[in-house]
Length: 429
Image (cartoon, rainbow, N blue to C red; front, side, top):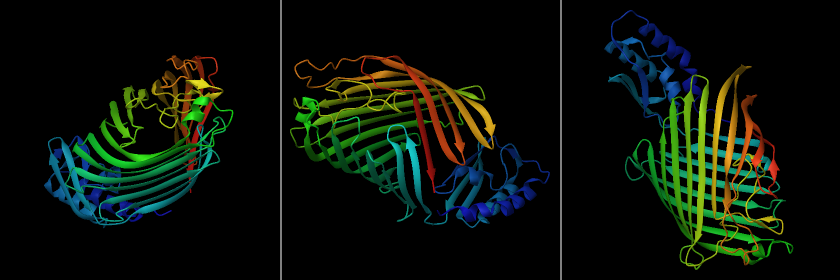
C-alpha cells in the first residue's frame, strides 16, 4: 500500500525545528485563538496546522508569520503558502503540488448483516486534475457488491461539481426464498452554495431483478418476480454542521428518487437520514439518530420486494437483519414505510495500549409497515412499534476498528427474529 504523504511527514522534524527556533524568540505580536487551514485537498489539515509547531495562542509578528510560510514551503509539497491573520483566526492558505496519491487495500470484514466478507478497494486522486476515482467490491456467499465512483471538483465553476456512480449488488440470503440483482449507473451535478450545504441532481439507469423464487414462497413474491430496466431521477440535499470536536454537531440528508421513468411501473421513493451529537462534559456525548423512508407506486402500480425496505441488524439493534415487518409463508416482505430512531449516551472509558475505548448505553425504536397488495387482507401490514435496549463498545485491536453491541428487544411481535449480539470489524492489508 502506498503512502502518498510520506515525504511531507518526513519533513516534519526539520520544518518543526525551524519553526520553533523562530517562534521561540521573545517577541510581542498578535495572539490568535484558532488556526484555520484552507486549500488542502490531499494532505490532512491537522498535519499542515502542526507542521511548524502549535501556532494557537502564541505571540506572532509579521516576521514570524513569514518564517512559518518558509517553514511550510520547505516541505516541498506546496506551490504556494500564505499565512495571515483574519480577526481572531490565523489562516494558512496553501496550494498543493500536483500529485497523484493513491492506494490499494485488500481486506477482511465482519458485519452482522452479511457475515465474513472479503473486500478490495482502490483509490486514486488526480487521475485527471482535481478528480477522485474510487473502486470498491465485497464478496461473501450470500452478498456481493461493487461500486465505482468518479468525482471531479469545480467542473462548472467553484461551487458546481460532477460525479459518476456505478454500483450493483447480488443477494441470495439463507433467510429469504428468493434472489435479487441490482445494477445502476448515475451521473450527477453537485452544487455547494455554502460550506455546510450540498445539493445534488442526478440522472441514471437502473436494472433490478427478482429471480429464483422458491415454489413454497409467499404467493405475493411469486407474483412479483421479474425484471425492470428503466431510467430514474435523483434529487438530494445534504446539510452538515460541526464535527465531533465541537460541543454540538448534526447532519440531515434527504434523498428523492423517481424510479422507472417511461414505464407503467413508476415508483417514487423518499429517504431521510438525520443525526446529531451533543457533548455531555469532556468524556460523554449524547447521540441521536433518525432514519425513515416512504415508497409509493405511481398510477396504481404496486411496489415489489425490490422496492420495499427491510429493517433490522445494524440498523435496528436487537433484531436480526430483515427480522421484522410484514410476513407471509415464512417470508419477510419488507415495507413501503419505515422509521427507525436511536438514542445513545457514549462515554470515553480510557486508553489501553494507546487505543481509546468508548462505551455506550442505547435504545433503538421504530417499525416497518405497509404493502400495496395484502392478498385480500390475509397479510397483516399494520405499523407495530418495536424497541430495544443495549450496550455498545468501540475500540481498536492492532489498528483494526471494532464495534460490538449486546441488545435485547423490549417490545416485539410474535415472529420477529432477534439478534442479541452484533459485531463489526474490518482489517485492511
